[in-house]
Image (cartoon, rainbow, N blue to C red; front, side, top):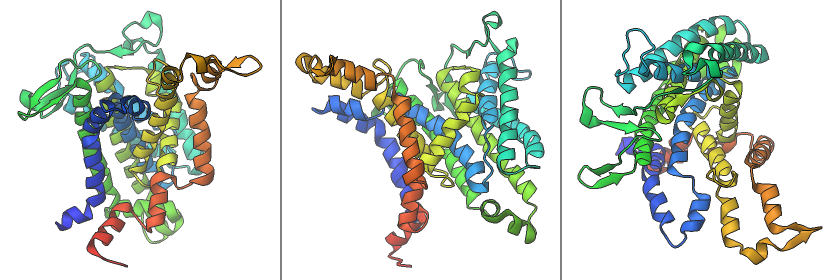
Length: 410
């Protein structure tokens, strides 16, 4: 009971995510189904939120808790993604194409740790904007290298083609087929009668299995943050000179944090590869991918660990709501289906009809509005979503809720 009180906030969040596919199905099939489809992100979108949210959390682990912005964090995300697909295609020595997916995730993470130690040994000789720029430089070197190396593409003559794998990956207990479930956008059959009661679509199977990996990774990072090692990282962020003055070798602590964040970034990249079954330099190594992680961290809250996940959920929800027709957009098709022909053809100004206005201001402009929202967050909600809640409660959400459940007024 005491543990449940201490972890009450986490239990609420986990319960919400666990129930989300069921909630989504019920609401979509309700009398308000059209409105719910417009507002709620799809289950497939939530899968993307999970694995990219993990990448954003790994970015926050180093950038939010030490104050060193790793603008080249895609180096580790891409390493995990490419390693998984290369190994699955039989292009990695000593690892056959039938190597369990969970093993590939771990080995890819270890490879990213080695890369992080090499990059960090050079980069942490600098600080501030110089550290950010040198990590960005390393990532761009890897991006160009991967883009131009024909060995990493199925069709080198066609340029930087994506890597592909036709067979689905599975998450579960290696060696026990009954405890492995296939993931991916084309994973195949749904799971019928799971535990004798529940049935899941392939999208829901991917949602739960990838979500389970992300949950384990989150708790591992949280445990590290709340350890003595993590407290030193916060001390480095607050005042590195003082941390050095009291005897801590901050270089090794920063390098250790960099390695930990790289491991989980590679896990996220591996989950991307496992779900999409294809990778490309543009969606893994490109520097703007780190920009998305930065956006998620700012919206969710720097130095909150879980905040970037909620920040990316917010971003994806808004993007899907405002995206082009046929690309999961909610608002645009909803307006076209419900306003009626007479309203759509009504002239607003100088020959501009309602239909043309909707197409002009909504169709394909999701990123414009997301950018505007981002600016508003920076100006008016600088602590982010979770950070603002923490400020209002007077401390971490989990701790404050636990105190209130115990009746502790301090």
